[in-house]
Image (cartoon, rainbow, N blue to C red; front, side):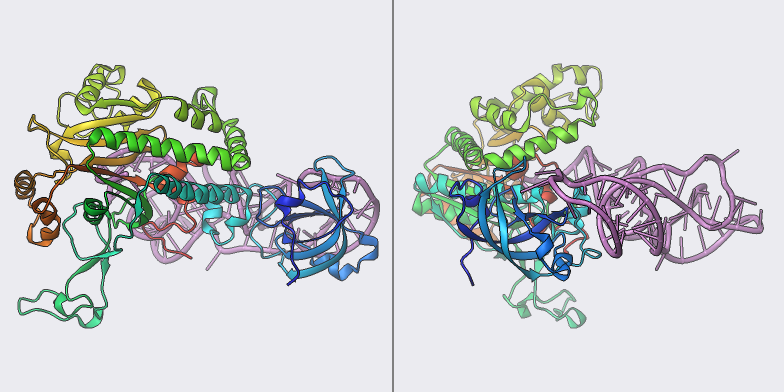
Length: 478
RNA sequence: UCCUAAGUAGCUCAGCUGGUUAGAGCAUCUGACUGUUAAUCAGAGGGUCCCUGGUUCGAGCCCAGGCUUGGGAGCCA
């Protein structure tokens, strides 16, 4: 194929008069003369100018919104307003026709719901071009951050046999014939005859395996798909999502918080630097959308200001107990405006409480630590008070919990006690306990929901719009 | 899973108290125009009113059940 010029480069090229070739998809075709062409290399289109009087009608008719073309012509300074350069076409080839009557996308604004139903085509829109470019850059920044710090990227298994992590409902993995399932003498499904010789699931977390890596390599992280079979229907849950889970040996909760805050700030800064156009586009999109809202509901900061604010301020760090005191004394609690009134210590915080702390009280990201052990996982390190564990949740405005983590319990006897109390079977996790028998050490880690990060940075509001092909209850299309 | 709102043309939506042949803008098609920026002007075509029952002389509209979607909650990252 002929070498093509990328539109991104041509738009800033001032070598007028040179012959160039571009290939892309037609966004609009105006006036029988002007084609707005996109090749995905940037958000902007390049304008192609056709000498329509000397082109066959049959060819012009085939230039429709969505079709793909190859154009060779001269790069020139534009006569019209709105763009600096354009291409005077000398030769046009239709690479792929696009029936205008059937193509769902029109040169107009579409609802996100409609585009979600057409997820195979939504990449063609400006909004999703921006979202998925930012997603890419954030993913790259995560690797860059950890690599610079000497972390080892560890691939933890996607298929796991341990059902003991308690992180949520799991998807079963099996090759058994549903119409003829092998049974044991007592009538239960006999997984001994299944592919792995035991019941297997898709992973809900790579943490336990990452701990194994950290206790030898020192600092590791995972970045992979994670599956939760919960019937959750919200704007911040997916059945299949990507999670980043660093695990660090010889680290306590303080180190863990520092690492998490550094990571978030690094990748947000990276996105601002690398995706200025994309963030700018999404910022304006949000401003446009907010014009329809009453003044009181509009954001105080635009998208870029919000991200910058996050970089410029330290995250507010406080304990669960301190948060409860603030909430107890808060106006919405006193006036009974909360759906769940805070009247004592020990209850889990509801979304409305987290939102109050982040969006009303502190007005910045918050790290809550030292939760009651009853509402947290078995592997979190117990404090001396016997009541709380060294957990941390990082709460972001509009997102809620973006990171959940803890210092891990490295003391074998205390860990076993806790597992007994919570009915966690020890035999299945013998390998996890072995870590505490053979050279145990303090260590800590956390899980960062990648899509929630992308939500925050793009300013999108539904998590289904920041992953190319969302998986959620009743939907596995594409 | 719970609460709540919605489902009408390709898209976004209107449709009165239940009453003739279900409308608009955009898109599409045809023609005109041709340096446009979501081009403009004129005309045309386009409907399983989400599905299944029910009430009624008559249902897009009322009732019951179901499906799907949006928003909120729970669960969580």
